Image (tube, rainbow over all chains, first blue to last red; front, side):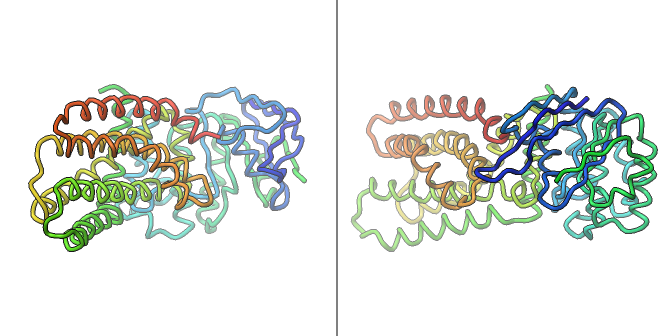
Length: 194
Length: 213
């Protein structure tokens, strides 16, 4: 599903990613590790198509609509409620029966009770839960998750553990994390960036 | 409704809802345009020509538009949301069109106050002036939204936006002033319509390259 050869990304004189080779097949769960500044986020953004490689080859065998991208930022409008945010993205992704899908995700991630409150009033952990709802909303085949456990409390992390375990094998994962031990039971491969 | 139109509508509705909640663009535009007209009213001598007054009206309109454009992508910039919009299967030009429509709505709302205020402070606003303002608005919002998206990525975005916008908007401003003061406004209105068509098409076609590296 993803094939990269000698993939490199520079921002001006600064090299953010150097010579990465990567093969990810459909159904794989690949964990990307490395210290700060090693290029984990850059790699995910390249695969998502948000950045263009400076050198090397990159092939991603899925359409834009088939990608679920969880970024450092929650990528939700703070002035809108969870329902309004998810309704907007559900429309853009042309999700049929979006009310049902949104309700199910908000229930699953424990945001149903606050569905009419503005996202700007949420804690970082609640925003991360909402970001996960947005990422999974269109049932993507390829999930690019950047530090998915970031800011989640024990309950939220447990919910995400269960969600990932459920989707493991049915979806393709590329997950950047500083805590690979947590994902060890799920991972099928690992890419260590230096 | 086609998928494209539905996307534009959903995105524009979102921008209007954000403004309704945050109220951080339209009040600033209204305050600026009214203040500018009040200052011009006291600064111009009593026997100043109508041409001079109309010129100042256009100065107020252009800088009010610039104020709106500077705020156009604030939510997307501060919260990285352009990534989420760009990743969605919606056509990227729909993002531009929706944002242009939202900026146009704010600008028209500001002008709905500015033009009557101009009539009170200076002279009546005639049909060609209103037509010139309406046509110039379209071009200003079309090209302004494109350069606002370009300046989002830059570090010196507050400087970049006027640097890019004002030279590109100059023909629209000149056409608008011409339509307001010339004896034969039709020529200028025709020019404005042509400017709108060319720059809207240009912005529509190039927005994808602006938001994707």
